[in-house]
Amino acid sequence: MSRLGELQRRFQRCLLTPPKDLARPWVSTGGRAMPERQLAVYVHAYPARLKEALVSDYPALHRSIGDEAFDGLAQAYLEAHPSHSASLRHFGARLAEFIANEPAYRRLPWLAELARFEWALGEAFDAPDDPVATIGDMATIAAPDWPDMAVAIHPSVQRLDLRWNTAGMWAILSAEQPTPVTASEGSAVPWLVWREQLTTRFRSLEPDECAAFDCLCDGGSFGEVCERLTAFIAAEAVPLRAATLLKAWIGHRLIGAVRTGHRDAAHKVTPSECAMQPLDRRDAGRNISPR
Amino acid sequence: MSTLLHTQRPFLGYGLGLRKEHYTSVLDELPQVDWFEIVSENYLVEGGKPLHYLDRIRAHYPMVMHGVSLSIGSTEALDLDYLNALKGLIDRVQPAWFSDHLCWTGVQGINLHDLMPLPYTEEAIAHVVERVQRVQDLIGRQMLLENVSSYVSFCDSQLSEWEFLREVAERADCLILLDINNIYVSAFNHNFDPYAYLEAIPVERVWQIHLAGHTRQDDLIIDTHDHAIADPVFALYAAAVRRYGRVSAMIERDDRIPPLSALIDELARVRDIAERQLRGQVA
Image 1 (cartoon, rainbow over the protein chains, first blue to last red):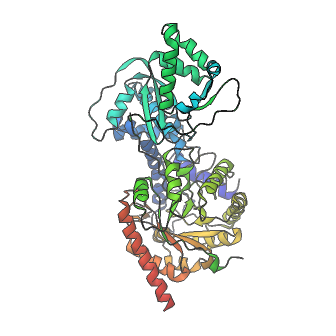
Image 2: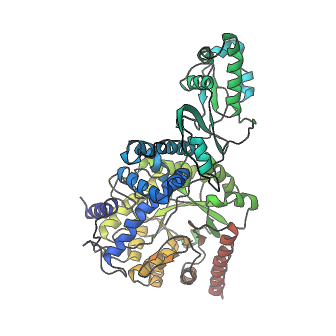
Image 3: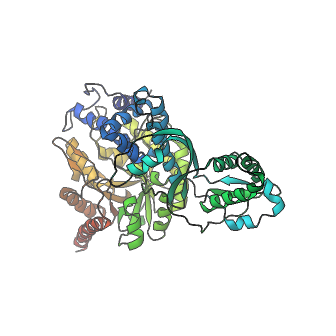
């Protein structure tokens, strides 16, 4: 190995697993500060910077357990999953999985789910700006083509099943003046997280809507969606319910390209003018600071 | 040796680092800022707010791109995925130029997300020069390399920091983004004369200047970008203008970010200092 490579490995090792005594023979005594103090700047800055990235991506989780406990979580996570990406954007991707598998967090059984929810918000935040389908696009589809019609789900859409009152907790924890919040567990409820233009939103799904939406996500056709709905409602009510759901999904900008069985080419879709009341607004972006 | 002429250096004026806290102010007020610098990594995303504001602000202002992840000094292989993504962003933004730091950010597949200093050795020069040349070939244009603040000095170093920077720039035929605050910080931390540093850097290669605030501790200065520019850094900047002439200059602020108007006031001081030096030169 080159001398330069060896030095970089030694230096990096000091950051990843800091020794008690930071004095190192490869650090010059010529600087103003003592050699161990010189290295300490980097050794201390490393976990602090990565923790800051996690706080930025998980602000509600940070508030939920407080800074001191979050510090411990960030440190343990960093040791288990140092960043391998050019961007800090991806560093926190495995936090929910880490919390779920870490015995120390069993006493906070809702924590992994809150992490999963908050990460989904981030994923929706900067997902691709693919075009969305409009009601007008649907009007161009001939009646015989409807059963075979399939759609692409917009890439900002995240589907989660939440057992805790996670979305409610998140909303309270994200308020300017958070009030006390109690975690409560129930049976799993399906949720959607997505972005409408620049606003990240989330909402829960009714059981029949969830079955229909998941069917579309799996590549199912509109005909298959209708079939799925027969498990929930009478056959004669299915076409109206299916059309109502589809219209709502399009209005919420959840649907991307539409394709019918007879045509390979996707319909050209244009941004929808449909509006709805904001359910949530996530203004946080990510700034990566040069130093 | 350089094939560049001093007169080829474009002058963008006086700019600011674009930060998300100021997106709406910038678009609503279209302030008197000559140009913006973006941190490239903040826009290496697929959609949403970052790119939305980027495109709209770009429509009103010249931009340059400043990266933090190139890791040009690392002994790890160059990250071609990153470079391709960077090239895509360059195509989108059409910046006046792009830059990154003369540093390394990790080895063995790990990114420390810090600007780690290099030892000032012949070995490191050869290593960095070869990589800068490859990056410039791949991107298809010259890049600017920035001097970083450093807190550690290595026994291996055989050269001064300014000799190292100059050698890299000349041999790789790249340009220089001179961070005046970083020179000041490193000069304090390593006991060298910041004015000697300025004198050693070839005039024609300096295409951009960074200014920022720092935090003074007992035995070290840390480059924190969370304060206004300190007076001694302004003094060093004045000397830089006297030596290099009209160079595009900007303020970086990354923490405790004040309202846009405060940065514009600070930028007015930068402009005033530079223009006074330049008038003095003419007289």
